[in-house]
Length: 191
Image 1 (cartoon, rainbow, N blue to C red):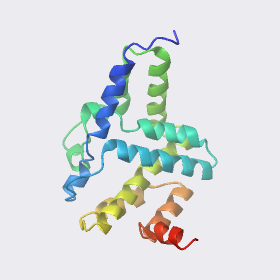
Image 2: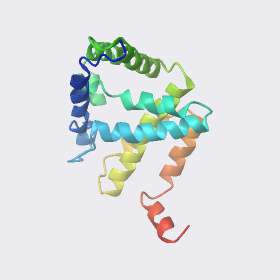
Image 3: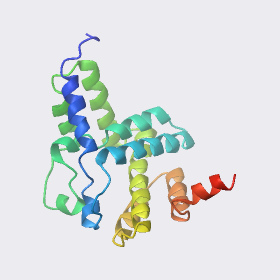
């Protein structure tokens, strides 16, 4: 039934945790107050829409997948890559299935399908969304480096190496050759 909202408020509260949960890899790099998972997902969604449009895909679908690509971290947290060497976390599809259990079927299917498509790289939009995740990480690392954090080069290098689309690679190279506040100078100069 389309008007059944049972359980959805709980899901919204759960996903609200993403505003408070920090991206833990940045703690390893020495960033004292790193971005939240929600902050990362927002910019990744914007980037995914742009990459998808330029790669001939559906920008809305790519952005949608990006919004939900890390929602599982409400249950398993943001495990840094070094931790994944020692842990066997549940798949994102399995966590999502638990998160949507008991929700209206239309919502459960929508979220489960988006996460599965993203994880399986089953479409051009999923590939663009995955590139957006890596490009967002690269941008954040460059921003942290400009703020004086010296231990972020590994994140820049690994993110750059993981980007697969032509557009994603071009955007990464542009980001690496542009200062994070160059856009302000252009605006103030009327460019």
